[in-house]
Image (cartoon, rainbow, N blue to C red; front, side, top):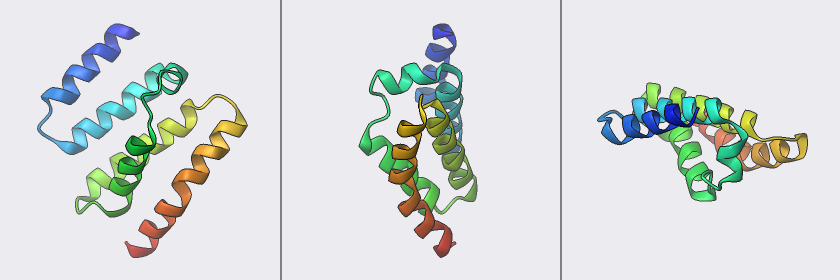
Amino acid sequence: MYLLALLLLVLVHASQSLETAVLTRKVLVATIGRPVIDAGHITAEFLSRTCTGAQSHINRYVREASFGLITAIIEACGDEHERSAMVEQCVPVLATGLQVT
């Protein structure tokens, strides 16, 4: 599992496409799950940038990939309380973005 994570990180750094980088992060979070959250890799800044990408990026494929990453992050949260807290952080930004689109 960690070998897969390392391979995915290499792909993110080698990628020239933002969409590919976001999709790779999505797979990384979905594959590893809870340890990504516990290790502190999902910071407030990372979550904010992901929400902003889902909300307002000019490329619709990047927006879609960002939504997928947000879903993977929320699903990686362990209990219902943590999921609710993560959703509360994302919903206001995403709701605004969905109204603009």
